[in-house]
View 1 (cartoon, one colour):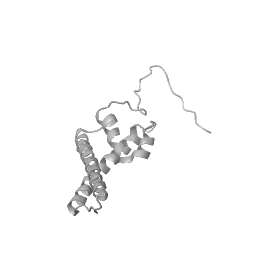
View 2 (view 1 turned 60 degrees about the horizontal axis):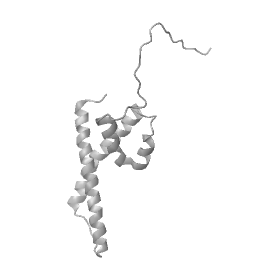
View 3 (view 1 turned 60 degrees about the vertical axis):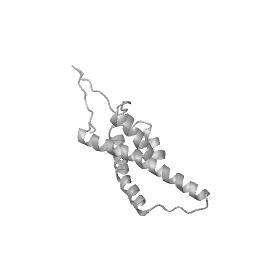
View 4 (view 1 turned 30 degrees about the vertical axis):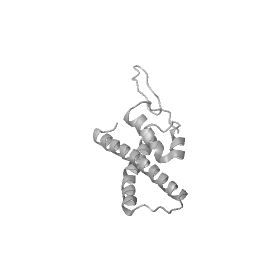
Length: 125
């Protein structure tokens, strides 16, 4: 279903996504504490560019998770989670469903061959 090379790229995107969220949380905490002290904190240009570069793999992982959801798992309730928690739930979905396969896909089925049965398709005339 998914190639090994693509899975390795998605794993790197997964870890970069976690690092980006941790970095953004730390940046917000620093901004809040500087605002409490009455200072105006402006991050360096390097930090802004670094966060911008780290967001590219985050959006790639989110895009692939949405693609995988609509292709293989579109009848599950995870669409609601994607709607409300966007990029954060893409990490959880990738880890549980795509990488570790902890949850079965709802839209998938194992086809069994039935011997001796024929399916007739009715046509309109």
